[in-house]
Length: 118
Length: 112
Image 1 (cartoon, rainbow over the protein chains, first blue to last red):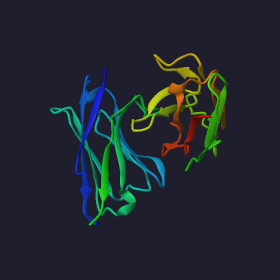
Image 2 (spheres, rainbow over the protein chains, first blue to last red):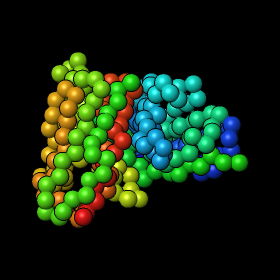
Image 3 (spheres, rainbow over the protein chains, first blue to last red):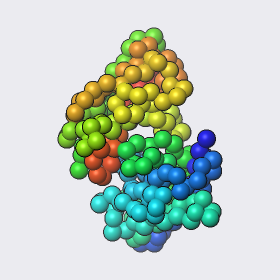
Image 4 (cartoon, rainbow over the protein chains, first blue to last red):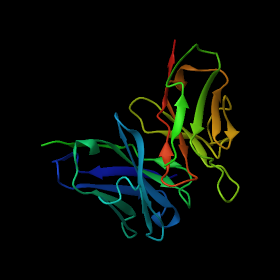
């Protein structure tokens, strides 16, 4: 059974970079696609992007210029970086597991709250 | 981008009665492989979403058969045959056929 756990910066200043880690246990990250989603009161659930088991990525065009995803197979972790954050980036960030092609989301982490404020 | 419109946004229900949530897509969700990748999630307060239904009508393991999904093309429905207290929360649809992936606004189910 897969378990995902997010960690990282809970409070980020405007214009700085948000960095999150998702630790995966129960399966190898080389077996699935790995997704980041965020949830804010103003915009509901928003798909940020995914990184595949080959390391290829696909980002939401609305965030593409500011988002980078990467992974470390040796640690069974994957990562999210969002640059130049504003208050609009405040929300709960979830990491999640998807099958090949990211056609659905099978498992979610518990989520981590990120607040952008000076 | 594909817009998923859920209705109603708020659904007060009586215990033991049926409930129905609609999810309409701005574009057909039939993928080139012939599958339709429409998923339903349930989010209880303070928890992360949990998948209930995938590919329109396939129930996940452990999901009660009170839950059913139907639809095709652009029009989809989640039905609860007899609402129980544990069913409260917000229900979301999500499409996995077109890029970027997108979610409906959510439907909040509460007990009358």
